[in-house]
Image 1 (cartoon, rainbow, N blue to C red):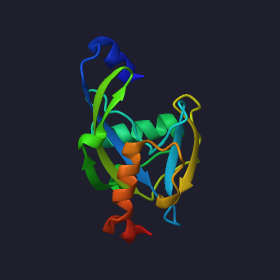
Image 2 (cartoon, rainbow, N blue to C red):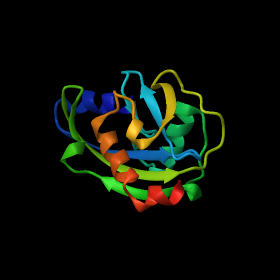
Image 3 (cartoon, one colour):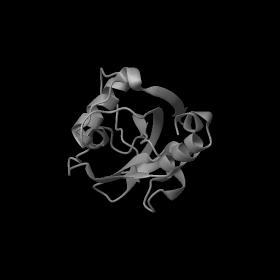
Length: 154
């Protein structure tokens, strides 16, 4: 994975990682959550790679990890998260994530986890997130749940 390559090159220096994140809603207002290979749950998304736009990174990650397609014109910008709750220890060093978050109800295809980075998925109400949900994802979901954006799409 890209972050592991960065970590190998940078040693223990703190990294700043841009993380495109998607809140994908179904018609009942539940949010798609993905289970990672380390048994933590998160929102679909990943890491920006050199030369990519945030939207293109989301398209790539959803295609690679879930075998679904999104149209960037269907993405609605929600919020950028970058406060101290997004500064975490990972792989033996500190990483500061900048989570650029979008939301949509639109996608094409049948969700199929790649079984490498994503092993399972489910749709959950904001107040029913899986126990192993990453803390920074809980922050994003809680903020979205209390926003007018969520109220406008359910």
